[in-house]
Image (cartoon, rainbow, N blue to C red; front, side, top):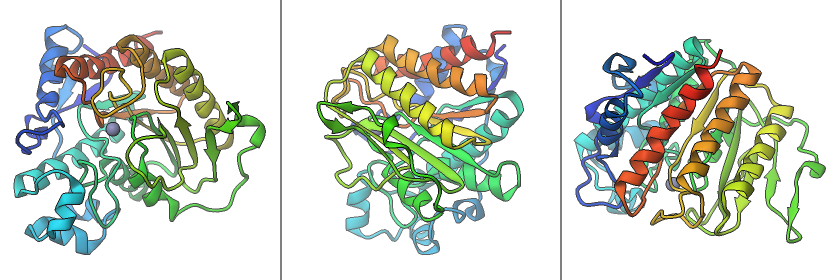
Length: 329
Ligand SMILES: [Zn+2]
């Protein structure tokens, strides 16, 4: 039995037909974790859908109403890049409920993994890039509303920039000390790390610069990675971003978005991490969180490997890494 919970439902499946997003990955991760003996059935807990009230902590009433009534315009649906259906909306409400449950369990156990979620391209008033509802933002706002946390830090390691995250939390930024330029290493004369300042939610995004989304609204720290970066360089940048962030901000909860798409065989990514490198990445985040005594909740976001089994393995390894770090006495 694991010393933490895995949040999962068969209803996480996204009914989007033939699509580059492997909607069946959630079920396959669940099955593989059991087959590998990493988790047993009692490690999994099933979420309930978030309430409309929870969703409205982040999203605009007009947008939520369109999702509830199936009245998105054709352009809004195109921008979301997944075909709307009431069933799809249900799956996103459930993913948000899963992230709320993961946050609650992380506060109890030190870590919890939502075998889903991480829909970081959703904005308050529209969906984008396969994301309808920003489940992580909903979970943070719900934990704050319940007075379970005051502050949070999002560590987004999906290959794509967390534009929805940056937009949602930009509005709450307050003036604070800017990041010292000395902490922004320079590669090839061009600073890769851009820092602004944080309010109650500090956002870190490590992403490939030459990739979707074209517009990258500022996170608290953005690390604009060059194409083709490999394991060691990536880990150094992550280490750097985490230490810079945690020097300036001590969150009550870390929300780790563990995208599988920095993988070198990803169809929508242009970085060159190996499966082993991605597991080391997960371990690094967990070790830092544990050493600082900050609870961490995990969501999965993207993963578009040519072989779906690679995406599934990368996501399963995140649970293995959490077990290695959090089972240590
Ligand atoms: Zn992605």
